[in-house]
Length: 99
Image (cartoon, rainbow, N blue to C red):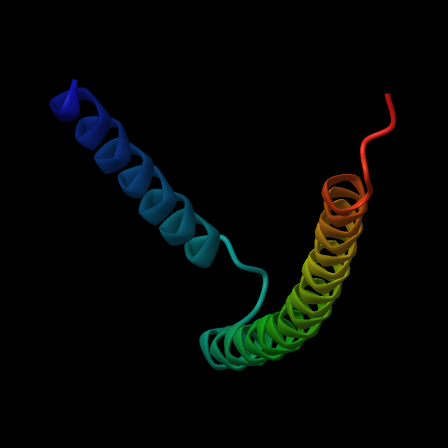
């Protein structure tokens, strides 16, 4: 099974390479223009990835903060419930039994 998936990846990469080669051969622009165009597009792609990464980091940070707040609220509620249960236990054990 591992051999099948690595073969599929190899064929995929070969297809990508062949497609890029055919695209360059049939490009409507001259070589210098095409290289400049490709450099510009690569730069735009890098900028887009950088911005996307920054947005993802900010979103992840906000998610972490919300998770921490949720955990803190749950801890406070659990502590309050434990205090209430302890108080009820004390009241039950300290009060004289009525028969």
